[in-house]
Image (cartoon, rainbow, N blue to C red):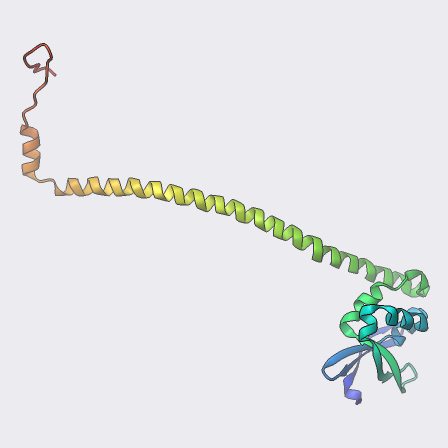
Length: 190
């Protein structure tokens, strides 16, 4: 593997944490991280190998060791490093690194909570807003139908008025109005 495929990601307690790219995949050697945190490398290697997910993805690659020489090191895919670090027992970490590991793990708890609970809260609140808006749309449609009927009737009456002629007016005005009086005769006062 060439040097250009090995990058230093960070330094933990002056120990470089490297990212090794091989065949388009990114891997992290775990020994330098174990050394930087003061946890037993061999115990972590065994834990990784026992883990069904991590064990199936871990393998040995060449990376630059703390002494500057290339060595074979057990590595895991970059995307799994964060989960592995989350499982490290903080009581086994060097005192000077414990606060950082605890802060990291607390942040992981927050991220997991936000991912699983906040998204559920978001979708719940979103659905409530959608349901409310659907009610508003339904009411608006009903109001629109009623307004359309009123508008249609008003336009029809307007059309009749516009078509009214002087002859229609005169005929209406001259129309004989007979009032019916049941006792006989007409009642001209009504």
